[in-house]
Length: 261
Ligand SMILES: NC(=O)c1ccc[n+]([C@@H]2O[C@H](COP(=O)([O-])OP(=O)(O)OC[C@H]3O[C@@H](n4cnc5c(N)ncnc54)[C@H](O)[C@@H]3O)[C@@H](O)[C@H]2O)c1
Image (cartoon, helix red, strand yellow):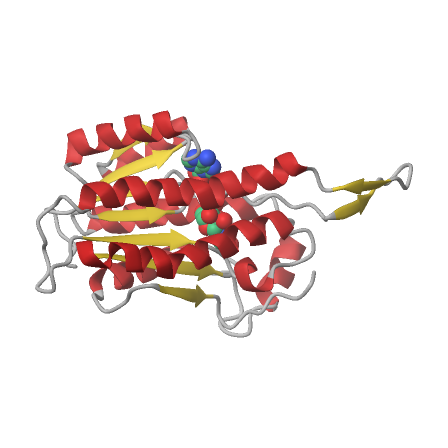
């Protein structure tokens, strides 16, 4: 699918990091962008800067997603591109030991459930609602293509580290739905592709001490550094523009394979 000003896009998590870089890249190509995020202040700021619409929503809350998609569509028309970047990365071991008392504590289910709610169910909710709108649009490619969905999992879906049970399970779910959803949506001309980023320098890493950041960068075989958000956006662009990419999950990680910790 060609990127131009006849196309509208919705980017969840577009207020920050990988989603923000994607929103910037698409807006620079003339695409009409709507940023859907919980972070109202930052989301509105980014949207204003790039001429996008900001729609506040929590991807786990159906009413707020419906309201946000209505706003986005009223401003830009129905989206042909959905990029799911909204996500959280809780860290907790399945069993941990309290520092002071040595007491053994089981992983709480609220943290596990929230990771699955945001990263997996939130992603699926966005896909289903967006695809329903895309399916009603006229085709725009010579193959009858109507739209493209890009999801964001993580290399943790395949090599989750100690403390990543909830995060890895939620992201593995995103990898797992990619092929069946692509098959579900094939008759409507809608493609679905998932990216598994390795280590990317986003606001998530701002709080990480410089030394630790350097050791993480050194663990990437080549190029031996953290990825830049614009490199993630570059892959989103390639996915949207390449009509043959469908039903696949792609690692973007400089050959990194995460160790247990
Ligand atoms: N940065 C990395 O190294 C890395 C690696 C692998 C995967 N990822 C994944 O990429 C995605 C983007 O990560 P990032 O590094 O840009 O993070 P980030 O924290 O910079 O951005 C995430 C955005 O999602 C939004 N968000 C969180 N929960 C939400 C919800 N319930 N509803 C709506 N918006 C919500 C946040 O407000 C934020 O703006 C995430 O899914 C993350 O798991 C990131």
